[in-house]
Length: 294
Image 1: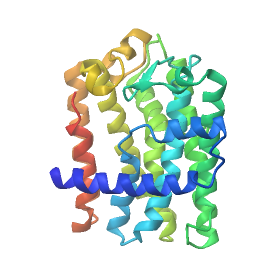
Image 2: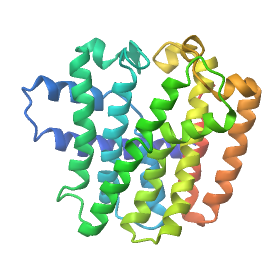
Image 3: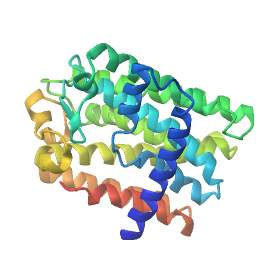
């Protein structure tokens, strides 16, 4: 895994450099831009960018194209975290060991900075930097819109909040987590198929891999919250239990949820290995999720 960490860090740095070039063109004196900077450059691992790049390697996609798409996805991810932390939602005070956006600035700034990062993602995808046919750009924007809105991330977040303190079935929890976390990972993989001109069936196969990666990521995230060290995580743990969140741990128990995570990993390994030797880095991305401390 040491080699994976080195390659992942390199992708993260390339993503950071591209995002910094985007922000260098903005009004540096704007408090809203400063808040957006705080949200996007907050020390995350850029794991979604890594998944995009490692999927792209399978099909020999040019690195710069993957970095740009990954940067757009990171903007969406950062927006979702900023809004997720708001008092009206999860009401968290810390994220990655730092004060959350609404604590660092204020609530209305957090809302507007998050919304601005959301729209910046589409600005990035439609920019001249991404040198692909316009028809592919249109499809990227359309697909990411669906993944981010009521059919995906936002819809999943809505279910997550409405499920609190209720008895929810395993099927409904998995559906919620696939929307809330899985859809954006689905786009990480499907976007490669889009810019490669793949047909719907091939795109769907890639998206299914991403959806399962996202589900696994969310399950492990819940396991970390249940049993992880808050100093390592960078925010208080056991918050899901305190808020009455609907998680698989509530239904299956800790050990049962760990077993499910390992089953999903096996299923993913079969799907990813079907793409041959060049899929090794993508499979390592999956193993990285299970390497996280829980």
